[in-house]
Amino acid sequence: MAVRKQLVLRFRDSNERLVSFTINPPAEPVDLSAVEELMDLIIASDTFYTYTGGSIVAKVDVRLHTEQIEPVAEF
Image 1 (spheres, one colour):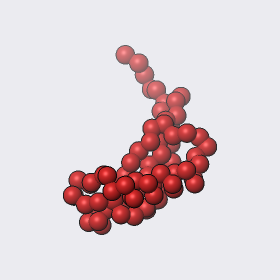
Image 2 (cartoon, rainbow, N blue to C red):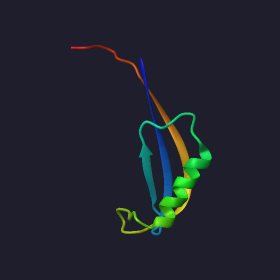
Image 3 (cartoon, one colour):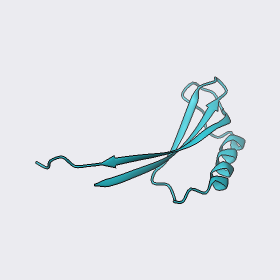
Image 4 (cartoon, one colour):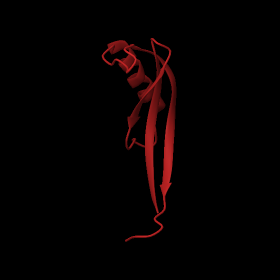
């Protein structure tokens, strides 16, 4: 059985849409202060534009997604 983890950084853009960045695989344990600093840098740089044409303007949350992969059969 394998486990896959992803750290998902979620933001809001200037058009009020959710935008996410995925870090795959994340460093563990997750250093929340480093993640928050990275998110602040992403917002301050105003480098990324979303699919709606807006800028990233606010942090929403950080999520650690864990997926457990269990093979059933090989062919």
